[in-house]
Image 1 (tube, helix red, strand yellow):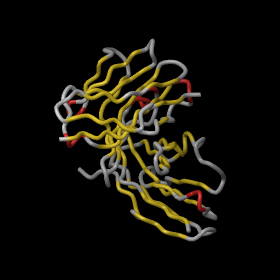
Image 2: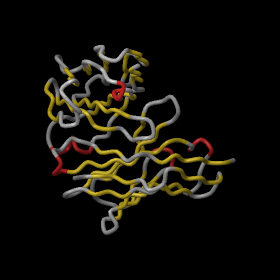
Image 3: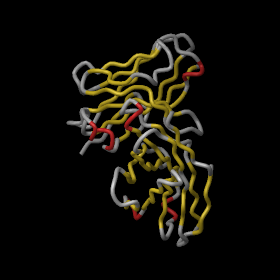
Length: 119
Length: 115
């Protein structure tokens, strides 16, 4: 079956511009996560969605970052006034369960990522 | 605060030999532990997880990991390495008392298996 897809695969932008990164989770997965991975580092948690709502956005670095999931499926990560330090690979993941304790241990399925370069 | 440490940036092993990739963690309460693998130009893939029960868990591609509560470790192992196992491996932890959903990843260990 289809896995998690992310578009675009690569995005080059200039400092100060606005960007949107899209994630299509696996059909039926109610939990969706965004991570940021810098070179030589592991994925860094940004935000978690349970259905349409952001259940945990504690990883968003500042108010330039925002994410939505209006219909509980596709999610968009939005970055305003991009800075060179935002350059990284942005990963999206989804998993089956979203509520309750059991969701803590359902493995996540990752997309291939979007490589963002801010010049 | 929860954290994960992968003390080795790189592990080199000859094909056919056993391999170990180390991981230690710090979390409040019971940990949920995971291993993921990242091949070049591909997304992270789940290998195995520990939730509760047997300390030795088996996963994909012949990998296994041993949970050691006293040493707060969750080392990844394979009895006989393959060249195709060469990849970047990440250990991850989720704890019940951390807000529930945040997964913390280690910095990764690159495994090189030589033919």
